[in-house]
Image 1 (cartoon, rainbow, N blue to C red):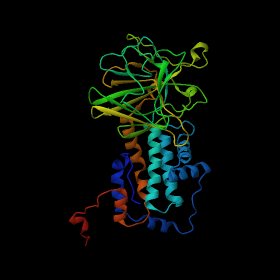
Image 2 (spheres, rainbow, N blue to C red; image 1 turned 135 degrees about the vertical axis):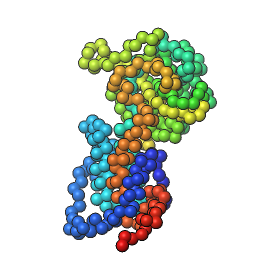
Image 3 (cartoon, rainbow, N blue to C red; image 1 turned 90 degrees about the vertical axis):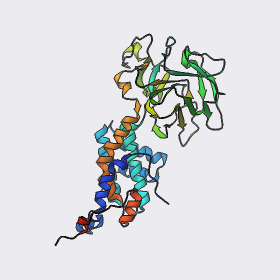
Image 4 (cartoon, rainbow, N blue to C red; image 1 turned 45 degrees about the horizontal axis):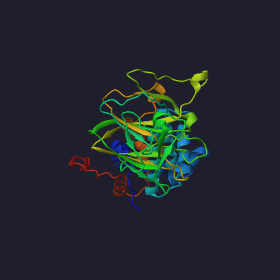
Amino acid sequence: MAYTKPAGLWRAFAAPFFAGLLLAAPLGAQEAEEGPGTEAPVISEAERNALLGAATGTEDGLKALNALLTEGGAGTEEITSRAKGLLQQLKEAGFIEDATAVMTAADRIIEAAVSNVGGGAKVVEFAPSTRFVPPEGVIALDFGPADGHLAEGFERVTNQDARVEAGGQGGLQAIRRPGQDGLQSDGLLGVNKLKVKMTKSGRWRIILMTEAVGEGGSVTAPFGASIIVNGVEIPISAALPDDWVRVARLKEGGDSSAEIFNPGDGASSARFAGGIIILEVNVPGNVLEIAFKAKANGNNQTYLTGAIFEPADQESILDLPPEAEEAVYSDERRLQAEADIGLKVAKVVAELVPEAGEKKKLEILDLPEPVLEDEQLASPS
């Protein structure tokens, strides 16, 4: 089975390390110097589960991998350090002999680190407004039934609209939510894809809206496990509504009303029903396609109440406290995370490749064969 490169760009940043190691002494020679009596490294149960998760790619295994990387609220440096440590253990443990399987496991470790550092999106609690009107240049969509409430300045999207596609056997369902106001009063259940015609190419801020519809139903992950935008899969935090980041508001007439709520402050601890994710991405063409990927196990359905698309070069219609700003997904931040992590782990990854001859290594790593100048080939005498 041929090895397939991941969508990530870390290999491009790591290429110089790979090329240099291909001309260095074989890894086996270093191991021979250490002697046959060298003991295998001690691996904790959590580390072993993380390595097995990287090797197998199962949902539970990847959860174990992410749990180890992020344990204790680890920051960027700690996550990167843990990923590098796992890669080192993957090399030393030697329980995977196939070169393709080793590199696939390494890809999963690096992808998990990138996603946790700068590649995921968190759900932000959202305080809906009945007075907000989208400004010029903003695309605003209101999801729901044909005879449902339509927010001022928004365009209605029903379950018969060509811009939305269903996922699963249930199809698209228009839902009314008694007791809710404005954008939260109705929505669409079971959206699998959303296609939106943009007014221009360039950088856009995407705001997707949902509602906490209660426990015990099929909507436990209203945006799915991940969202695919422009072919890039973005993991979504699995936090339940009580753990959503607090709290975003729509600006009304230029007023700023965002604040950080302290759950212990009496009335300010009241939770809002709405939730949003915010993505900042580059849109190269005139049509933006968003796909929602459900969890592998279970019949969880997506639930969308609205969507707003605004050019990233203009002032946002959202008020966000600092904590919520950190929950925004940015493709630029993800690229930077890939570059930083790729550079820090490149040498360890290159040493992972089992002895298979230089041409085989180049094939696995997808690098050109090194070209030596005449003076490099001449032996000194």
